[in-house]
Structure formats: C-alpha cells, structure tokens
Amino acid sequence: MVSRVIPVDVFDLVVFGGTGDLARRKIIPALYRRFRAGQMIEGSRVIGSARSDFDTESYRAFVAEAIDEFIADHASETVAAFLKSVHFVKLDATGKEGWADLAKLMRKDVVQAFYFSVAPSLFGALAERLESHKIATADSRIVVEKPFGRDLASAKELNATLEAHFDEHQIYRIDHYLGKETVQNLMAVRFGNVLFEPLWNALFVDHVQITVAETVGVGGRGAYYDRSGAMRDMVQNHLMQLLCLIAMEPPARFEPDAVRDEKLKVIRALDPVRHDQIVRGQYKADGEQQGYLEDVEHPDSLTESFIALKVHVSNWRWKGTPFYLRTGKRLKARMSEIVVAFKPTPHSIFDEEAGSKTNVLTIRLQPNEGINLRVTIKEPGPGGMRLVDVPLDMTFADALGPVAREIPDAYERLIMDVIRGNQTLFMRGDEVEAAWAWTDPIIESWTSRGSRPHPYDPGTTGPEDSLMLLHRDGRRWREIEDYGTD
Image (tube, rainbow, N blue to C red):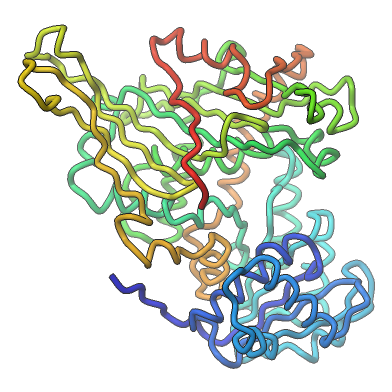
C-alpha cells in the first residue's frame, strides 16, 4: 500500500509564540515532516513571532535544534532546505513593536494562517492588531489552542472576542485528539461499512467506555492544572469529542458543518450527571515521587487529577445505553481507547459449561493505534463445545505495513487542514459553548458541596470507588494495559 501525499497551496503561516514549548515540540516538527513528505511545497513560509531577541538567522538555529531534538531520522540537506522557508519577526502582542514589519513580510496572494500558540489572554490583542494593521484578509485563518475558556461565561467572551475580528469560518479551534488517525478511522468504520451501523444503537450496544490514562503527573503544569482539573482539562474537550464521534448520527455529507451539526446534537442530548455518577480522585505520593498536593504546592486543593463519570445520551439511538468516561494522571499505563461492548446474544443455544461471551469493539488511540474486534469461536480440540474470545486485530503497524509506521502526527494533519480550509476536525463556537453548558453544573455540584477527591495510589487504575461505578451496573472497566510505544 502506498500513501498518497497531496501538496497544499503555497502559504504563509505565522506562529505567534514561535519560541514557546508547543512550537518547539509540536508545530515545528510537524511542519518539517510535511515539508519532507512534499506536502509543504516550495514558496511556502513559516514565520516565527515572539518578544524574544531573535532574528531570522538565530531563529533558524532554534528551529534546527527543535528538529534535531524531536525528529530522529532527519537529513541535514532536507533540514537546510526547510530552514530557507523559516523567518522571524520580533513582535509585541499587546504593543506596537513589530507589527509594521510583519505587515511588510506577509503576502496577499497566498494562503494566510496565524497560529495563536500563546495564552488565551492574548487572543484578543492578536486578533485586533491583525485587523487594525490590515495584515489579515477575508480568507485568512487563525488557529487557537485550548483551553477555550474555563466555563460557559468565559467561553462566550472568548468567542465574542475572536468573532469581533474574524468570521466563524476563519476560526480553527484545535483539539489534537481529533487529528489522530484512529479517531478519523472511527468515522470510516461507522459510516463506510454496512457491518456496524445497523448495530450501532441501544438495541445492540450494552455500554461504551472511553478511557484516557496517563502515567505522568501534572509536572510543570501544576499552577495551571490546579485551576482546571481533569474535568476542564480533559473531559470537557478531548473525551467530549470522542463521545460525540461515537454517538453522533450519520451526517448527510462528509462536510465540516454537517459533521459538526451532528456532534452538537449529541452534546445537547446529554443528560445532567448526578453526583453519585461521578468519582473524583487525587494521586498520592509513592515514596519516590510527590503526590498531587505537593506537585501543585497547594495542600488543601480540592482539584481532581482523576475523574470517572457515567453519562447518558437521551435520544432514540442511545436511550438507556450508558457511556462511561474516565481519565487520570499517574495511572497504571499510558492508554487512550474507546470500547464498544455489544449485548449478548438474545438466546444462547449452548449450555453453561460452554461459557457465554460478548462481542467487543476496541478502538485504540494510543499507543500503537488500531482497531480490535473480539468475536466468539469454539475452542480448538475434541473436548466438547467450549467458547472462547479471539481478536480480529487491525493494529495499523501490522496491517498496513510501512504506511502505518509513517502515520502523521495529529498536528501535521490538522495544520495541513488549516491550509486547505477544511474545518471538519475543528470545533465550532456553538459546540464549545454547548459543552461548557453541560460541564458547568457538574463542576458546580461538587464545588457547592465542598467535595474532596478520593486519594489513590500511583500506578493503579484510580480510586476504588471508580470500580464501583460499573460494578453497581454489573459491568467492569476494561483493564488499563501497556500496549507498548507509539
């Protein structure tokens, strides 16, 4: 199988915050890989911008160091060719310095994109100056990173700020989870195969589990994380998007607004979550590493590093089928996956000794992206009829060969979609606000009660109470397992 690379149009991409950690770790390596693959064609330019004392020459050295650090198999001649497309403008986001220089550098006859790799507090200043200095055009695109607010009020304020200077079709709210190959394959599996869609409803699906587990703690993000917590940092955006893709109706067409309209319907159909359907936790110290309270330097913190929820979607397709969501830090393994557990056969013709099995579809997002369908067969041998589960495994690296081993990073795909003008994998303003409208009452419920998260040991699956969330329903969480490295 040969992977097709379709070049994008010539572009100028300005990275505000071009010397920051996100630019160094993700944006620059992603652009280099797309250049190396031939998708970023000659004439395109990457323009770093920050208050740092760089010029183009020193910024190119910074870019070369980032490539050397985060891309193992780079060739010096390819790096040198890429660096010719790199420029730098020293600029003050909230002042006057540098804006005239940027205006002179930008071209009006190519695709213009502006990546706001900065704190959300600077979004308004950047948007206003891009308009007032007549740098942006009606076809320009801006890319903004999460968090898209911290509640409904701030999300509305942020959207209003951006929309005062740019139309909605110009705003790309990026969630890197939607750029993962398996997430997009989820839509292909659902809507490209007649096998699954007739069964994709409450009549046949017993429940759905969505897990995003991390082995690391809050690290250097302690101050930010303690103001956010797992609910704001992960559930309101990443897990919500995965839930929408699982639960949404087939769109009429595979077009940005058609897809996002169906996702919005799912969010609006979510039931309120009761406090007995939520389990929150904080990781403890383990003798070698600090606990959450020490990491965030806040001994009285009530912020969760783990959360599990039982969620219902009240519509005809999903009424009565629970969705279990969980995410946490310092857990047993690094793993992100979606599990669709189907109901057992309505009548078993086999005796109890044969065993009763159910079909399970597992979509693994990381590590080692792939899709696995567990089916029931007879155990080989002459010992009678005994049923066993076997996997139909499509780990991409095994099934697709070299193509899968070269799967683009999520940022590569998403940045190229910005240049193409394709918003399918980006969140719309009303979608963000709807997600916060559902999330806010949940946070308010535990805040008003002064609820304290349950402590849990690092290297486990989280608080014991999270197991009971499923045990009460006669179900079990799928084991958090280490599938190896990406």
